[in-house]
Image 1 (cartoon, one colour):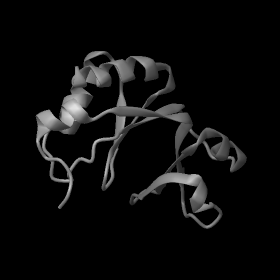
Image 2 (tube, helix red, strand yellow):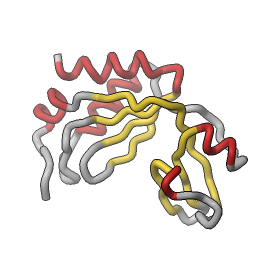
Image 3 (cartoon, one colour):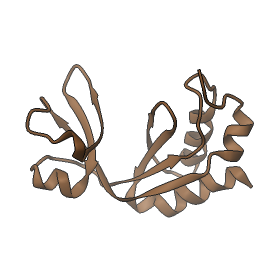
Image 4 (spheres, helix red, strand yellow):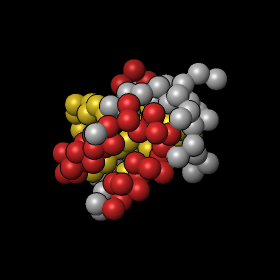
Length: 130
């Protein structure tokens, strides 16, 4: 398994990057009428399929959403076996009243925060490398 496992090294080198755009979480029953090239991420749950996509795509598809999110990628290549990274940054964000929704992919961790909280969230995450 590749990727960094050491928590202190992960925190010092996570280098958060704000991906431009407004993102939303929507639910669909199937992916038949959705161009997967326009979907950032999706996850099949027993209740429905969750799709994460740009707000403007959701509006074109007439999909409902409840909150507009900003997307932050931690650019460090974290191991899927790393322990404590999510707990560290989610605790720091929660102490400042910022909710975060996390997707851990093979190379990076992706954090979605309310659009109104992006500047504050980036400051908190960048403080780990100081």
